[in-house]
Amino acid sequence: MLRYLLSAVLSLTLLSDQALAAEKYVVASDCTWPPMELLNDEKQPVGFDIDFIRAVAKAAGFEVDVRNIAWDGIFGGVATGQYDIVASATTITEERKKQFDFSDPYYEVAQAVVLPAGKSISGLQDLKGLKVGGQIGTTGIFVMRKSGVDVDLKEYDDVGLSIQDMMNGRLDAVICDDPVALYYVNKKKDTAGKITIALVTQEKEYYGFTVKKGRKDLVEKLNMGIKKVRASGEEAQLLEKWMGKK
Amino acid sequence: MEDKKDGSKANIVMVTDGASIPDPREWRLINAWSIALLGAICTLCALCVIWPEPYLRILLYLPDGVLITFKITLMAICCAVPLGLITGLGRISRNRFINLLASTYVEVIRGIPLLVQIFYIYYALSRFVQVSGITSAVVAISFCYGAYMGEVFRAGISAIDKGQTEAARSLGFNRYQTMRLVILPQAMRTILPPVGNECIAMLKDTSLVSIMAVPDIMQRARSFVGTTYLYFETYTMVALLYLIITLLLSKAVSIMESRLNYYDAK
Image (cartoon, rainbow over all chains, first blue to last red; front, top):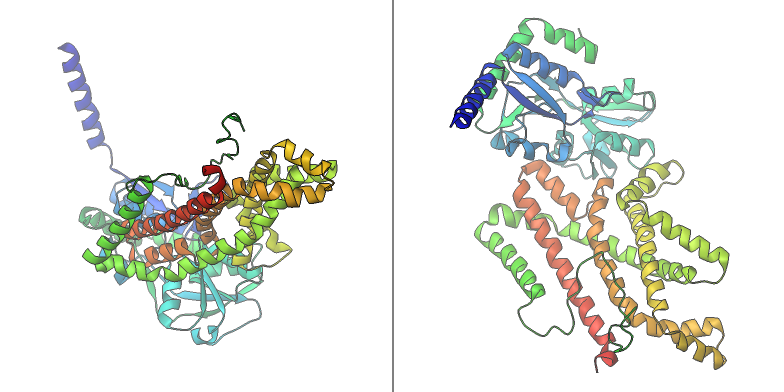
């Protein structure tokens, strides 16, 4: 009898402990998309998105545990509840909105076409008949498909592999988000100077944090956090740290 | 190669990889193979008829991927089987150098996962030679399966009774003629089924090439999932499609085996 009582008390205290502590959400991020998210030398996720979600969490009063998850299944995992939030430079699109809920937009990007240095194009139609690469399931691929330009579209597991293949001469162009393109063109040692951004699309896209459909509570928390981070000026600091913008 | 007394199990080459080949002597209508095939086909049809959206849409999205998968598999078979034969002969060669060369090849290739070999040939070796995704896929798979098939050929050839060689040699055949005219035709009967099995395993392993942006069945499916986020539906269709293909091929190998064993069965 005493044992039952003890275990009941113990479990109660444990449960209340959990309730008292800040809620902890698991965040998934595909760390192959610099400077939004990448792995540092200690194999820990870093990047603008990672710092931003941490700042948002702090402002909204919850904790986060960031994990590196491959892009290919990242939406499947959030749909089945393996993690709560995807903070991985995900553009808010109509198709994705049907399946998932998004926070307010937190960053504006456009699609950039990267070419080997010295080459140029005046529009997407100039890519006709060429081999164009990008990361599988990203908006760069969608934009290329929707443009209706007849290209040989190669879908890689991560954008780094497609840049590598273009450097090797097997691809004519790579299409990806402009911050990522800028990182490879300016920052990354082995590609900087050898490639160039030839075109940035007019249409803008907006990143949002992705959660499972119906998690209104989480969306509200995230939106509140984003507002606070913006108001406090922390966002500007992060932008300067990762993008060099003021 | 035991059980020499009754002769029936003398020439069985064991393999551990690949689909299980249905026993050609199996005459009953209901067996594992027919249940699996009927089940797969019925499920596939039922899903497409009851929920054409999205299942039929997925099925119609995949055919060009199926073609690429078959293309890579066929090309790899054409390279891997001769490579396997040469390796197998090298492994039983009395020439120390050739023997060592073939054995080292088998040892090295079997110790490296196929996925790593594919990455190596496509991304690492691209510093020196530039080949397309499909070519690297064929090269990587042929080299890998050449080593496995080398072992199958070696086992098949050594399973032929030594008396055959001795008889041929004493009849005046030289070593090359003995191998080509006496040993290999007999060994083929035991070798072909496991080689067919390796080919089926090869077809399944071509799903790895999607990492090189080669649009095979798997890559087509992933790209479909990338836009629709229908993970369950898409991968169900892909699994059923692969299952139906391998089941049909394993039956083909089984029929071939029963033809080859025509004299043994009597």
